[in-house]
Length: 516
Image (cartoon, rainbow, N blue to C red; front, top):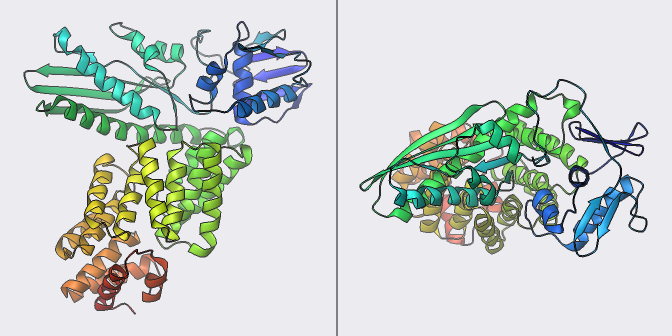
């Protein structure tokens, strides 16, 4: 839809504002705010409306809100004194008061009209969780399906990738036969989660699926059969597994969508999605590509906290796997992570990125605190869980580390970093002198990915301590292939142990394996 007023054209499809035919540069968030005000011009838009629609219910200061309003006014040649187009209604909110003419966007027309009640599209996709259908035939069991749906909705809301529609909206479709495409249009979302619960005696079967409403296709579906020994424990477990499965599926779908767009039409969100697709391939070349894409996203929107956070995390990933030098990389990553925190202090990725910087610069207490904060914000964040496990090991808490690594594996069984989590679990077992278990976990890590350094390090030191020279030779050979700069000096100076005894134990394993 195009909105024409005075000498301006606001194009929601092209995400472009022009004045007398000249493009007016706007930050994505300012564009979203202006588009929302124009689309909702028939009413006064409250501060709460703006925070919900533009900031996804995050805590936003009055100064931040006013700066975006002022930026929108400035783009239109308006200001706070004249308020020719954007008027402040004292104690009520804001209203766009200009005369507007609506035009259909250029290009192919949509097959169905979008209702006027639909939410204005933003860079991030929206997702709605419908009430799970009670298939038990027993109205008394409604609470169980509703509870799972609400828990999924709450857990997804902790993730900053997408807008999650509130329960009061998505649950209005309960018991109604409405096509998901209609629901998506009315709620302004791209993805819909639906499912069912069938309870018989003390057994329950739960199904869940993620739908792409734009295509009508299923992106993911799963069935869970459980005994109801503890109702709430089952509810928590199923919620955890469903949420952990949904996030990567949306990332994959968004990445596929962005790769079908022309490079000239990519915005910051699309660049972030493409950057993430490289991030999760876990190779030096892909991380270099990810960083270039993320730099472009940040250039478009310097206050894009999510892009800044992933940019920082990518740099530190290279340090942890031996691809990048700590001395040159850590300052870049720390600056980006702190910038991400300033933009959005409740961003789990920002805390994880800063925690990874603190970890590699031997600030283990700070690292553990940041990882714990990331997990408090998003308990299903497997990457933060894996980092947390690693930091616990180096802090001398091996038993806690192993448990945390097991949780990371359980959270995301299809995670591209699964090999790393197995390697971390193996290292935890190595520190406890359970060398055979460490070897088994390292082999499992290599089965998932045979090109990562962590598993070969664990395999080499564990084989060295057990005296298996053939296995140690093989592990060292592969380690030198994946990390050519590996040496006793690198290990002694680059890895952040809290206890010197743990460092010496690791070095001894490498010496016995034949590293010098």
